[in-house]
Image (cartoon, rainbow, N blue to C red; front, side, top):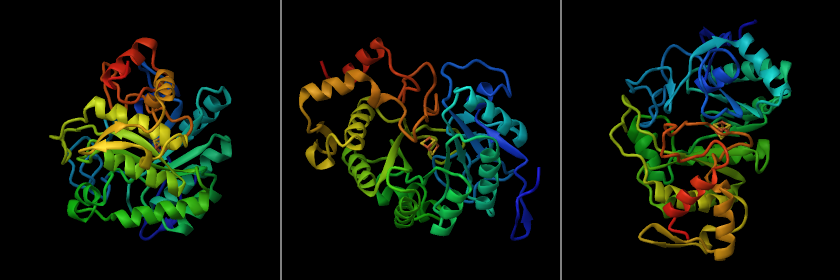
Amino acid sequence: MKEARRSGDEVFSPSIVRVSLGSAILLGLTRGRLNAEPTTIYLLTYRRGRCTANCGFCPQARDSTARSDMLSRVVWPPFPTVEVVERIGKAFGDRRIRRVCIQSLNVPGILEEIISLARIIRLTSPVPISVSCQPLRREGMIRLREAGVNRVSVALDASTPKIFDEVKGVSAGGPYTWEGHVEALRGAVEVFGRGSVTTHLIIGLGETEEEAVRTMQLCHDMGVYPALFAFTPIPGTKLAGRPRPPIEGYRRIQVAQYLITHGLAKYADMTFKDGVLKDFGVERSLLLRIVESGEPFMTSGCPGCNRPYYNERPSGPIYNYPKKPTLDEVREIKRQLSIH
Ligand code: SF4
């Protein structure tokens, strides 16, 4: 395999790529038991060092002392790219997967590395490709699109500019600004189109439910799909001591996300008291129907992304269901939402 082009003083080779453990098991690269099969193959660009950014929740952050092969609570062992790509082509042909997601660190030359990886995947398969990356300029987004990337995600992670600054911005010793991320999302929508851009929102960073819902509406209005993540404390990260979000509040935010992204209600229709979501602004019969469908509680993100156990242990509590919740699980969800 050829090396990627030269950028600055370094030459980057996409000959090795990290693969999330669940994806690696599904592709047959390693052995293991899967409680739920991933419907997307998650790849992480391979570097020996850490990310140059310093997000307080991330094991890859510059100042983190967590294992360097982790992202969220998932382990990402490295494999030869050729083997990974061949197996992705076969798994997509066999309809075992619906998407590939390339997650990247903020390191010099990363755009060239992502482009090389996307091109190699595209040579062997028409599988839809998402890229989750730092804010890029418009030219970088266009190059991703030309390399065969179908969707881009730029993660806001935080629901307010203040929390953003504290957990991943200047106050956290990072390179990012809220305005820069919003601008990059707008640029991504111009290049990829409305509905083909994602952002990640982590619930449990200190925001109120109202702030989270307001930001989801902002994203939706911009043509950006907000994918929900539950904050997961990882030993060795700056926010390791912070608790997970309460499941009841997370469920309310999932319902609001579903209503907003399906055009069934808006933030302005909903009622909040002291930041807590009290009324979804829809008829009770509709609310009951969507809650009982179980869909709002399934992993949200790019089409086909189910991130099994990215935020939770299989023993629970399950914040994002990687497959449709069972009747028993829906009963439990209704109890959490106090809906009878
Ligand atoms: S929503 Fe899923 S597929 Fe899309 S960028 Fe995020 S992790 Fe990747």
